[in-house]
Length: 346
Image (cartoon, rainbow, N blue to C red; front, side, top):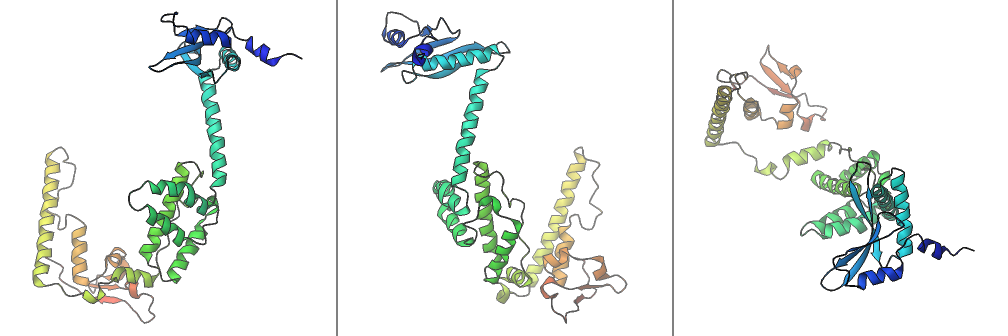
């Protein structure tokens, strides 16, 4: 039987004895490399610092573009001359075959990293596992908000904690959302909890524990009319009152000043190379928000109802606007809110 250790040692002219002598001998002056006479480019590099002298196995070669590259094989004596020589022979063979050794090493490192990441992803598969593992570690680095975010996800998604993160679906989120509304949870709380979950899944994708966020494009459903009414009204219903004359005058004054500001900005733009823009001096309302505000003041309609106005709700012949507010449209006896002709000029 052939002695494998003897064969591999003979691949290189650098023996263990020669390596130790090179590193310990101070009579070699400025010589920092011990070259191998059998493997072109293979050498032991001497590194001298304040406390000790160390050795590093390296391989020098010229790539396909003619650039000299250096590749570190390992440290001496943790990597023996025989083992280092085996790797050097492999690198030399790759160079002779037109293959860049540094690229090969980089590909191997990436493959190893992917394998390690795959093993980690198998450990942290469920929402609970990732929440208690990498995400808890991530949140612990934050000065504020970390514990609250973790608690929000734990308490907000008890039925999804044991689910594989990749298996989450739109149906899961919609069912969860409806369950929260049925339990009387506010829409704002639902939105915050869902945002926290999506942020955690995005973190898992960024750190390659998850290939893709399965609910990245899933948007929450609009809240039911009762919840929407509570959102709009909130705690201000009992504090509603009519605007005073002084407040009304202030709003009108603000609208006039804003209109003039918009017109002046347009004049400046037209005078500085943008003459193609329409002039606003002869336009009654230089910005859409102005008639929007006036309409809201004279009708009392909510912003959402104004945005959803249609031409069918406006009777130009009788100068009358008939609107069924979202808040009361589910009432069977509601025929709509009739708003008679009003002087909207200000």
